Length: 407
Image (cartoon, rainbow, N blue to C red; front, side, top):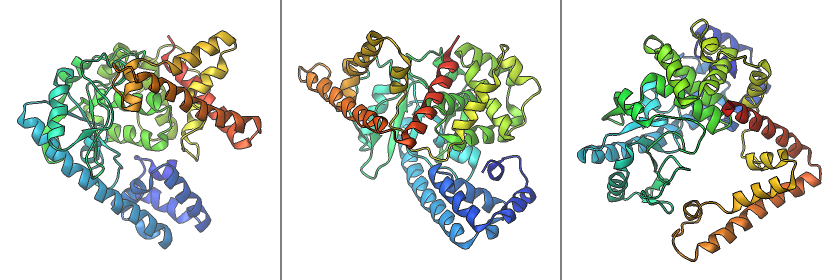
């Protein structure tokens, strides 16, 4: 998969690789593609290089069907995005398209190559009420409680707003939760933003440097590397397509300002190790002057390439709980996971945070945690081998995550 997806590989290298694969290889490869949601990307890439004839018939049909289904889904999403962007433009609400909404047409340039679960847009915080109202006029409805007047420092976007057809829009006012250990300057994002076009609409995009750093944070920090090669491919493709206009000095400066030097360094080191990018000489040394432990890179690559990326029963919270040796510390952590802020409980269970009935939300939270954790602990007691392996993997993710924010 690493060689097949390498953005720097030419068509002849890919053809040699495809001819070397046996039917048994394709069975394993198809399983990996399904687990990592990469079927559409592989098919689009091989179509662009006129190599689909080298895929066995059964696998080719599978890849083609996945690609066409994804293209149809993306077409529906982009049509709805066009209507939403037009309505927001009429109200003079500036919009930055982020993640798939921007990448699909501007980086991938193939409507079926990359999946989109939802439409992500960034607006100014003061425009959140008008944006929500505009989307509601288009029949979008928030899936749970939200009040823009709340502090909302633990989230970065309005709870998902959906249409009856399943289209979901996430309206961001920032790229990271404000209580994360980073100092992301949102106003700087707007100042550096550039005109862009997607969904047949004129809007804005992040600067190339901000885009790269956001994708690094999204794949490596926010998702604990669980996006696998898919998340890495986004970044590698941006670097390849925008190579001539990347200001690496500006990227280093912004990463330092955000406190994201370790996140960027680990991401670029992984991409370089995969052979997917050509970075400027000395970039990693100047991006993170302190010693970069080879073991961190090795462990990160190990979890990045795991065959299965299904949701884990062993959560970061359980990992943190297992790392605490003091009983009182464990109790405090458990209490902090149950007695969340009122607005958080309200969002989780669709309740009014000012209602006395919110106590039911806390009871439900305790019940949910007990049900989730007791199932995992039961499996652990029975010494289930797969869960034991899963625990080690999640602990590795947790330790990497802790390293990323250590100062």
